[in-house]
Image (cartoon, rainbow, N blue to C red; front, side, top):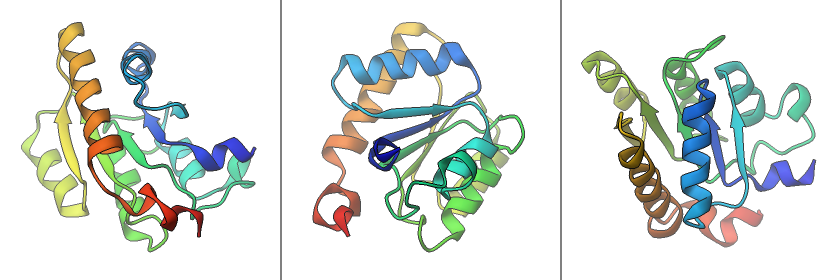
Amino acid sequence: MSELNEVEILLVEDNAQEAEMAIRALRKNHLANNILHVEDGAEALAFIFAQGRYSHRSVEKGPKLVLLDLKLPKVDGIEVLRRIKSDERTRIIPVVVLTSSREDRDLLETYRLGVNSYIVKPVAFDKFLESAKQLGMYWLLINKTPFSGEERSR
């Protein structure tokens, strides 16, 4: 269970094909070694808040990045985002919405709740792979977060 404390990216995506494409793009470009893919919002919350089958991990050792779809079974992405950003222990985890929703209300609501970025998934396979590569490069290599160094070990 100790490897669950070292998750770099939590990918919350109910479409297995899209999840596999994102994982493949990130790994192909050596952007993340430890990716955890969950298929619904309830499991994402269980992981983030160290509940249920994830109770052995530490909430404070959250992932470096959450890639979050909005249209999810059980608990939707907006509620997952709301819970992450409303808890002092998890508020600083960068959350990137990666969704097919082009709805203005989703965009506005996620930014109101504190999302770090909102990306509409490209339809074309090659464009999707390029987007995943750029996303990983920015959030894992270029962007500086409290999880980038010593702060993570506390």
